[in-house]
Image (cartoon, rainbow, N blue to C red; front, top):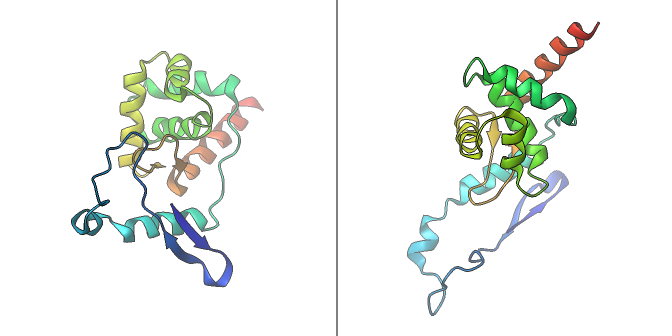
Length: 157
């Protein structure tokens, strides 16, 4: 857990490391060797990006996202498909079984959705924290989502 100052003094103020639920804690706690392996600068960079004023994605229209994802996926793992999938996942992850929900919408298996989300993360379309579900769409993904929405609006007129 990281506590973050707001405003002009924005930055980390406290970092607390706790074992994950069910983890076996060694007697005496974690060692200095383990602490040295913690990438604190990556955690700080992640939190800093989270606190920047990044435009947020519009709400997902669940009636339209399934056919949109299915259509985009026909061309393979394009950035457009992966951005739309990351967008839907970032919203769906607020509920249980997000990957299963996306699998139903797209007609793909949950394993395929998991793999596609991995690709979205590698292509800088989805930012995730290891061990946690959900994520944040990146500015690169937001740009692609905006373009997709513009095309959809043009087709509707």
